Image 1: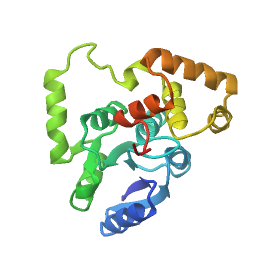
Image 2 (image 1 turned 60 degrees about the vertical axis):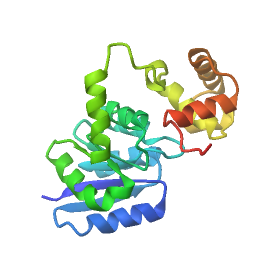
Image 3 (image 1 turned 60 degrees about the horizontal axis):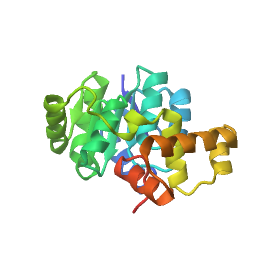
Image 4 (image 1 turned 120 degrees about the horizontal axis):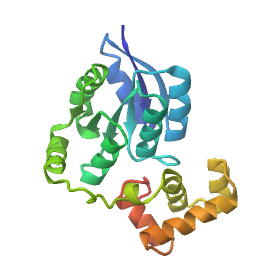
Length: 217
């Protein structure tokens, strides 16, 4: 049986290139495409793919949060992170979210087929440039040493933070997340309190640094 793959990237040309690459493999079938994390969640529920190839930096709902939810709701589905970033924060966040692979976009043509096949067999695949970061983390990690946004903020708070830094108002954020404006404001107060940051500019820089948003500085 062929491995069923869902492609998730906010750039259409990137998705087209990935689809063309995977189409060369007789044992792999691309069953759908999504341009953001929210759409990906819906398509995973309806298409039931084996593997999701997920961009890390996307608007609305980033790849980290989308991967976390996919793995929580569909334990069988494997997620491969696809990114331009070699920063260890991005790598660690995706692996903590349950990704079984991390492939750099610059090397996708050579490595993505291997990554998908590894994922379908329950194995992990990391671009060589990334593997060293994972080894470094495993040998130097100390209990309680993770002070990233993912350790201090809850899932809904991270989602609010991303939408706020992308310029959404409280009412727009509330509609997007299907919660009340009052709840959004509560999350915002908690974010400021936990992070010790004030103002949208500081929050935006923090979100970019932690890979929570695709907004450019």
